Image (tube, rainbow, N blue to C red; front, side, top):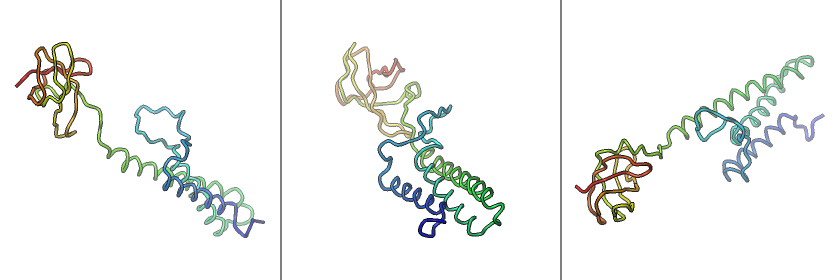
Length: 179
């Protein structure tokens, strides 16, 4: 006999739906996440065991369980078939949500890494003066990233607001010369 006339699947659905709403409103709740030990070749920043995906799985498991229980599969098959089917449908739903989140949120993010070698020949402007043996800072505007601040070195002294051309990458700096 179910508490307050609701099936256990309905209670599971309600609990995980509340968790899903809390994640939506508050974001990551206190750093709770289940994806710390998952190792993938590509770091997408999203794990199939992240809190939103787990909450979607739980809410859909409860929802499908409630639906399947009310449709009924007879008294003999119901205790076995309902949870199995609910789990399969919930896995498909959570997997679909993972794919949607991966394609909508992760893959649309701009790349933040700069390949310094690809900037060879680009023009920039000095923001922090460059002295021989002492790095300065330049800004380079690219179509892909917009304004990019870079540490720069040069064989000559170059003052603020002077224009330079990137010659090469040297470690995590670019070597430049005056235009």
